[in-house]
Length: 247
Image 1 (tube, rainbow, N blue to C red):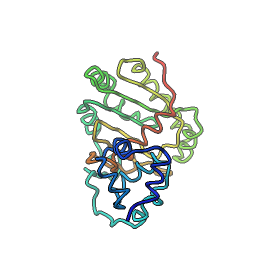
Image 2 (image 1 turned 30 degrees about the horizontal axis):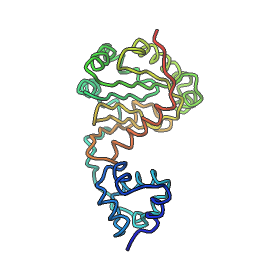
Image 3 (image 1 turned 60 degrees about the vertical axis):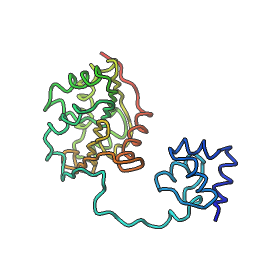
Image 4 (image 1 turned 90 degrees about the vertical axis):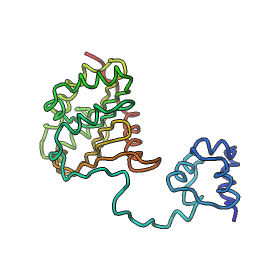
């Protein structure tokens, strides 16, 4: 049965099969089958297409309302650690060292990296010299959300002090070709350490310092998976962040 809702949404926006297919990275014949045969695309692809068309994904493809069976383990999950303190700093360093295209770091402070590995700035400069795009987003110590995080951790002004210290560590990198440093004022639900298609994601738990919260190691295995969810989250925060001037 044809998907008339999809046909109307595409017609309203002037979308051809080829144009929409190009945006969601599928074959135009796939889009044609969605419309004329009522086929349902993969969930990640459907969500992207619905966003592009400005429609509710479940209105376009009601079958996606059905719950999917839970998987025992995500194919993108490499390892799960009970808490960040269980991970040697060498794991973070090795991950960043392997990066060839992208390094993204989203934290409030994470001063443990510089304290345990004083060559961190040198490493990031080396990666940038080799053509790797490096983006560092740290917490704005004067922001409401950073102060609130301090109250939740029961560390008082400790988190604010750590954010200022992190800024001191990273400021020399501001203005280095290939490296951008910004401060953000968002509520941070996870710290993210990304290197190309791998990432260490440190959960934030209410009242628990980040070193005592779980970490999952992800490796991207396809579009629309867990890795992409966190990568998109980084991009969203990055857009709100304020560039740091060198000094």
